[in-house]
Image (cartoon, rainbow, N blue to C red):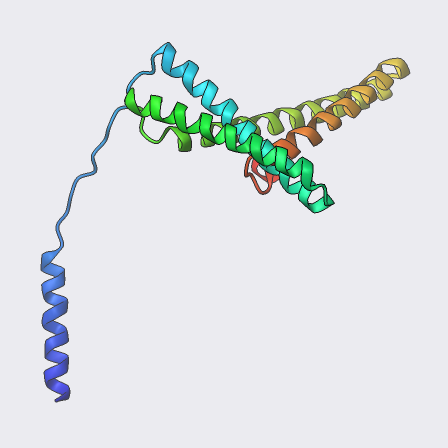
Length: 175
């Protein structure tokens, strides 16, 4: 009985091995976007951002216990979602595959880029401040400190927006 089971298993494995076929990957070239499609994708990205923002505000309002504000935020999110659906339907009719996913990815990429740019600005301001301190130029160093403070405020806003748009660790992604 044991020999019969092993023979049957060997036959099944051999059949599975011979049944495999190799295929060549299909490469498709992306179609160039028309200005109308670009404008609609931009509108879709703004709708996606608005939807994410309204959902986050509704969640924050519920956590605070402000249910009236949460209701209005949910209503705003539903209208943004309806706008997303209409824009997606229009783009699909023009031949764009998965426009909502594409827009969501573009939003995330722009968020990561904004965080990365702000971090780079902070590092540049810090090195400029250190150079000014070594040179003895106190006024320029103070101006650089003010720039750093403004950049940190911008970074905080960028991180908040990135998290709202679905990036879990925006600072780690930016490095």
